[in-house]
Image (tube, rainbow, N blue to C red; front, side):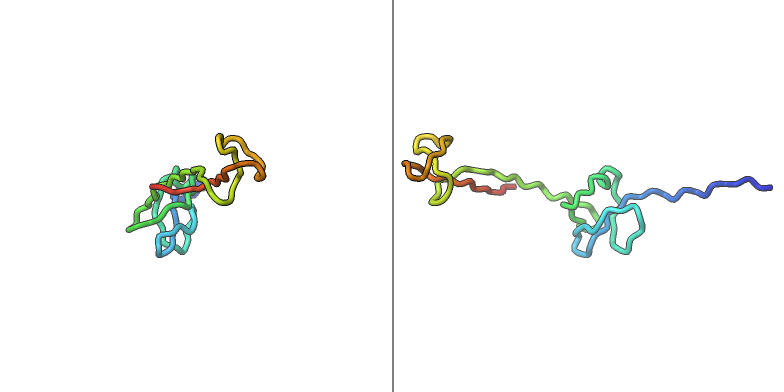
Amino acid sequence: MSEWVPPEPKPIFFRLYYNDDGTPVKYSMEEEPYLFVEIDSETFWSANMNVRVVDGQLVFPKPTVTVNKLQPAEHGTACSPTDVCVVVSEDQPNIKWTLSSNEIN
């Protein structure tokens, strides 16, 4: 009688599947009908969809920084003319402030 031998385990691979334009479709450890790049396990488990594939290489875009700033405006929150931290009713002397956001690289 022959002894039972377990089958060889399938190799483990981590892949990012992507479209023709380099945008990600999905992270998977399965065979899929898309273009793919092999990735490491850390990249796989982060599953970051803010990536692109360029010339077969995974590219992480530089993050943008958003800067918020209070600016005087015609419409906004009415504040004391001497202290922006003090909110007042619109029937009192006031300066209206609004929050503007700017992205910088």
